Image (cartoon, rainbow, N blue to C red; front, side, top):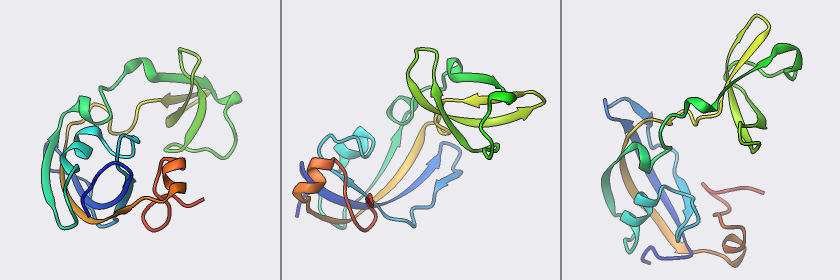
Length: 158
């Protein structure tokens, strides 16, 4: 079966930064719903369109094609006294950004009475190289299309 809109695609993806440092070794397969559902980077999806199981490709994606530029405006601090118990450095907290929109912030440092937060994705500002191999392609179920993601093995579990 060829990869097309509303197919469930399982791939292995080895991901490195531009210096060759491994970001993901590709040993855990990833499943996504093909056809503009934002389950995979758009340029990766475009490169896989029309391909079949066994297809392998290498792609270099710029910062703008991955997680975008690092945005200093997404750095925040909050008083430790207002900080929820049990969350540590490396953890996440949901709160409003400067525009009043809810987003997740990573806890980067706790220094005295201040907690430092970063709303950027950890890979923001990085260009990445991908080695992608298509492991499986099948028709998506009606439920997967309605939920806009793949269920089951290597996909989302409800």
